[in-house]
Length: 240
Image (cartoon, rainbow, N blue to C red; front, side, top):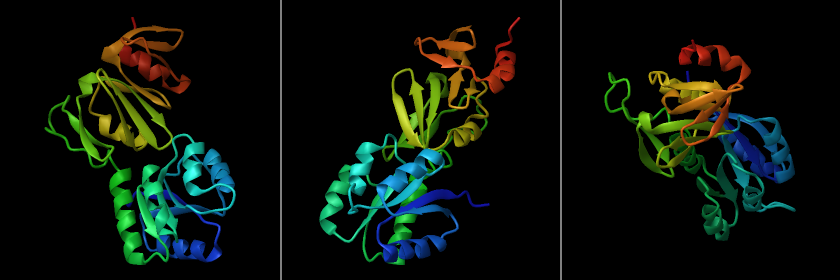
């Protein structure tokens, strides 16, 4: 079964919307969630749907441009810009564009952009274990177009934010595209790292104390224990 990438099309031109809908329909990996005509519709939809991973975003639109949207919206999904104006390319990449498609967009060029999106949005599916049999083996994640080695013993906690995941280590913070569900699948063999909240995993070896269902880690960070996770957390802690 192909894991879908939920995406949006944002363009104020009907013909451009139809071209993008056609191209997206050719890819099983893409799931088109909505077509928006302006940035206001886009923001409204993102506030309702937290599972969007990719936006095909026109740059030149009335009132608010595509690049201005990135400055307005905290932690936006990955963005592939579309435009009929080549002069916007540099500005687009300054705003961390995943790719830049110049209209009219051919299916061949669109295919390359989708392939780039797949590589960028599946960092945990592409982790590279060193030894499969070792419980505390290191693994790699894609961050800022690099493969970063992660030692699970150095993980303090992991936080999920929409389509981003932050791994807080003893010496650094690593941000990757992905979901906590994908993280959970990758970390299931690391017994010391457990989910304690819908937005957090913690390394129980870094736990300092627990008070009123709040974990305090060795770095003094406080992490709440979600109600549904409390039974398994306290069982794992072997509370006497």
